[in-house]
Image (cartoon, rainbow, N blue to C red; front, top):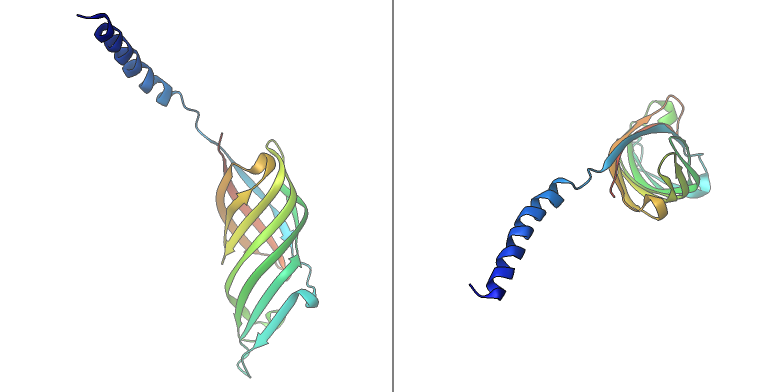
Length: 165
C-alpha cells in the first residue's frame, strides 16, 4: 500500500468516528417561558377608526401606538402597529374584536438571565411570535399567547422562547 493511500484511510477512519461524536455533543437550545402584562394607553392621535355605517362594525388602524411591557420581559419603550376588525358596536359597550394583526417594536428590552436588545414581536389574534431581535436577543425565537384583561387595552402575555447558541 502506498503512503498516500494509508494516510487517506487513517483520515477517513478518524473523520468517521469524530463526526457522530460532534453531532451528538451539540448543545440543545435553552428554553424559557416569559410571562407578564402590557398596556396600550389609548391615544386617539395614534388610532384611526373607520365605522361601517350603522352596523356597529368597524376597522381600527393603530400607527405607532405606545405600549408598556412589564413582567419577565420589560422594554424601555415600544410601539404597536396593527389592524383590528370589530363587530357589534364600540368595544367598551359590548362590541367584540374579531380579528387583530400587528407588530410590536420594542427597544431596550430586558430579559433576566439572557440580556438586553431590541425585539420585534408579531401578533395574529391571540398568538404572539418573535420576528427578530438584536444584541443579546438576536438568537431568540419563540411563540406564545396574548390574553385580553378586564380593563380595555390591558393584556397578559405568555411567550415560550428558545435561546439558540
